Length: 448
Image 1 (cartoon, rainbow, N blue to C red):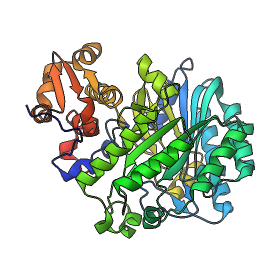
Image 2 (image 1 turned 90 degrees about the horizontal axis):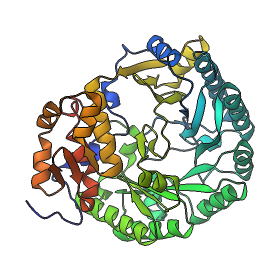
Image 3 (image 1 turned 180 degrees about the vertical axis):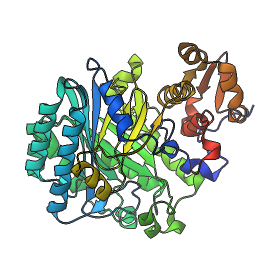
């Protein structure tokens, strides 16, 4: 067995294209056979005792970031946003009417796009509707993604009035050279002002998003961005590696491929940022998150309650996610559903009084077993395969024998496998997606 390097460099260029495993199976397995009728059945059978999560997708931005991999629309007009919000409100009504009594909600997340570009009055109205249609728990997490370039004092005040208690601020990089290369120009002062306004109006829990592997990015610029972020003391940070897939995202074709760092440079950037954040007192959570010791993610990790779902890492234990808005993904007890990807089709369905589900997936027992193993690996860097299989009544012999990649990973010193327990060496944390992929029954036959 070879001794593992302190910086894991995969021997393949496919690492950046592997699934992020926020859900399993991934959306490539979703089928139009699972539609609105199936979703209605799943909602009607949803128990009202257990809390659910709500995800509301607001797919609008003022300008296009060239690195972005999410479906968004660029608009300078608020009328497009308010028209969309009218459909979103109608979808909330349609979903709420499927259950006999108001669902208890433990977590609300507004994503995008840039949800904070909606008019503040519309946001307050939307929150009022959610509180009227659902039973938001006392102390529920209400989170929103913030673009500091367009974030106003008026919106900050509205967030405070609505009870928002966590905000995720998109930073990516403080380096102006990198910012120009990805078409996202924002100053340190803009980010600081956004953070100050959030805290002023009671949104105390702050997340930052940083990235590595961007065009013209260097280890030094990554370190400087990390240090500037640390100075603002967010409660947690997500440090994502840029995935360059221009064949799927046309906006990424505007990025100069020659300016992208190679695999070894990406690994060095990720390691340097991680070391800097840990030295500043942040705990590393799963693959790419860092949290102060008193943050909910750190507490959940210590207590064994850390989860990973379509929203990423979470301290909540809500197994059900209700996705609202165009392209939003949800999960009920029996599987996954996704709304129509295009706003026009989404609007047409909702305006006709129909849920906008375009595809989904019904989980099998084997799917649940593999999903549980992958989630444990992504959260804790280890998974007790024997215990998970026993709990599901599944024969682990078939599962382990199908994970041939594990043998290669063990030979490379990345994983240890003994008595049904697979463990990723902490110094090889960056290989987590490769280890998770060893348990993906679909990866070898699906386009990435």
